[in-house]
Length: 252
Figure (tube, rainbow, N blue to C red):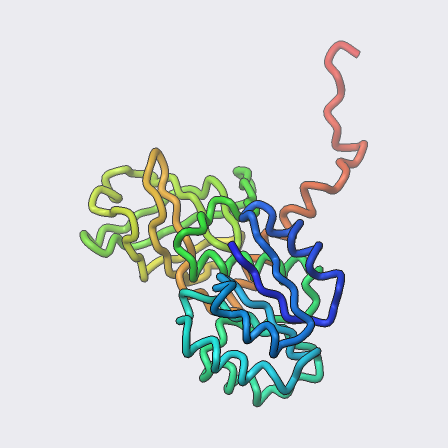
């Protein structure tokens, strides 16, 4: 996967190479947006990360040029902004087919997970199972329910693992999935995270003993809620167990 970075920061390239090493990312860094634009045809990037903070006057002509050659699913354009970014510019970004507008702090775990989810959403050749996963325990109360779009049967089941890009699902009744196949789209679905329930869209990636889904066109707010919940669970797992709840050794 070729990832084009347009930024004045010299430290972001090695960081991105480490972060996206599981996707064998080839990060090409430009500190000159005009030169980057000239080389788009040669490089044919899968993802473009463009710092509007560093180049506020160049991102609009860049995205216009990019979209004249590559569609939204061919080249993902992620605009990196800071607090000085004019909110009115966000509507222009949507009109110009920017895939996402994110905080420029790429060292944020949530921002990185958002980027992974965006890449998975737009690039079907990127396996959602390769993104960072959380494996729920029985006490995490993470479950999925959805309506089979072919039979209108309601399928319920447990989540084997989940990331901000998708999840793997084990149904309570296998027959509720009989008519689903790879690339089936499920629009009537809900994800239970603890006491909360989120409406979601799903696309089938793979069916084996379980079914792997990617999230489909999640609102930004829903992505953030999933990321925050999984981060909280992961952090809880790292907390040390207090001495007073450790079971005594029998026969001691």
